[in-house]
Image 1 (cartoon, rainbow, N blue to C red):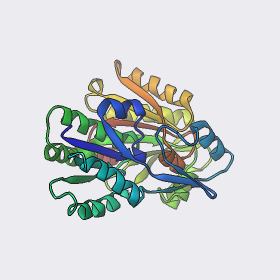
Image 2: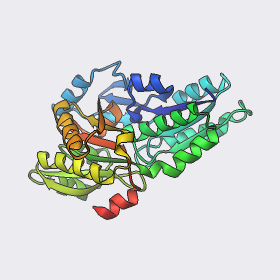
Image 3: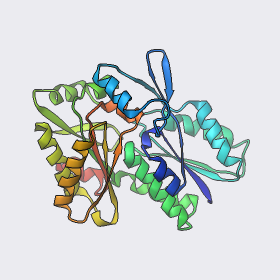
Length: 296
């Protein structure tokens, strides 16, 4: 491989996808009380059912960005092999990891003067971020250079989109991921928010619908409205321990987009700690986010 592609724990890439596309990742951390876990996307230290089950019982997890030591070890691992590095980071609107990586990349220049580290602020998380890494891997496998690949991702990152709904905005509010006013209207009786990732990479509640079933309809309808070339991509549907709900959304999308390919996955621990159990998020490549913001 001409260069290494690295993401972090918010990319939610499964082991199969990471192995298929040759993608590595840096682990963030999360904690419950005095116990700290490494945020493995393979749920090595805690099962997703125990994780979300404890949240349903009222437990709240605290999350930590990628530690400097983790970045240093991972970057050095690939640089020492003679590989350049493309790091596709969680949105700077949600995590400080990309800032840490940029500082470290500058410091590593003296030790690896012939190598390059490019850090991209994805302005999204979840499989939106993960999909950028997959696209980068495809471009690398086609023979594109680090510069060509990183430039394309930078120019097109606002076309990687999400629509999501949560059972409660309390988790996002507690984590500082939405405003208090958004949390208030979202938690009105039977009202479910529809969230997108905005131009600055923040989670923005752009609509409110009555009831969970209606929120699923809205996710499918908005995906069908804003997706580009739907039969040439995989539509990823993440769920926070509610596979049945994800299947409902998948079927609704397929009704609106005959022949569409969907893939379901469990939302990882870092994103999950912020959005809470029962969350459903749809990721796809579509129209520019400006159109979504203007059209809602």
